[in-house]
Length: 311
Image 1 (tube, one colour):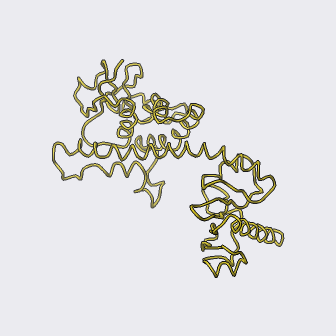
Image 2: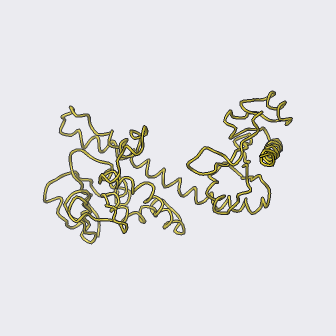
Image 3: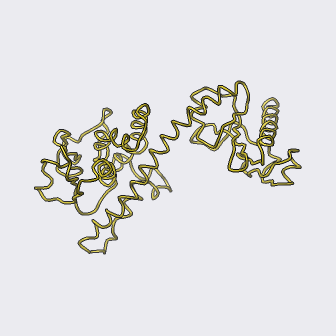
């Protein structure tokens, strides 16, 4: 069946139906997007997908609302928003439309559902208080997208629809970037795993370019690694490895004597020709060649081992 109309409610919008529209307009670019509460439109029928309106959830009839009782829920009883329902039924096809490899499809679908879709569902249903984000509440995706609604005293009849149309490509950019990063992370994991095997017992991991690496290091159980070296434009970088994704604490810092030094001062302090810069935070340094970067990394390993042995 050809989908000719994507139907959601008119008036002010929320993140869930806006993000649902991102998925559906990608899959059905020929379909007209209709924002209405007219009973004829929001009743299931030929060629229509109806979402966030209609007081029913029936995938076979292509209606995906969540405002009725009983509320549609996940296996763990958390309530869906329209975004969660649309992602459940159309997310795999959306990923295929973005050329995600079939081998990665299920993992990325689940990861995006957990990290992006579920929080939208929770915020829309009031099962998660926005205040859990603390001072960053105003920067959550839900709040940012809904800030694109018209201001209260814009009484133009077209204001809501125009704002929705302007917000749609912005929402799409967030979704596509999140998925692209997840796909890239999967590609990086394979590269990092190979590099770990090649590094053997070395404390230094050399990568062919900058890329996400910590999850692959954790998966490999490579607890011995302390620093990562890789080319960076025309230079080479030496970086630490965070203990966890929720912490800035590293397995080992670069030597404290290097903090904030550049060029000649850094070369003198380290004894390495080509040393160019070390961050004050001691989590990254830059050299002008692979040879210089590896020497800096080896010195950093020696310093870290001395500190460990002295403790």
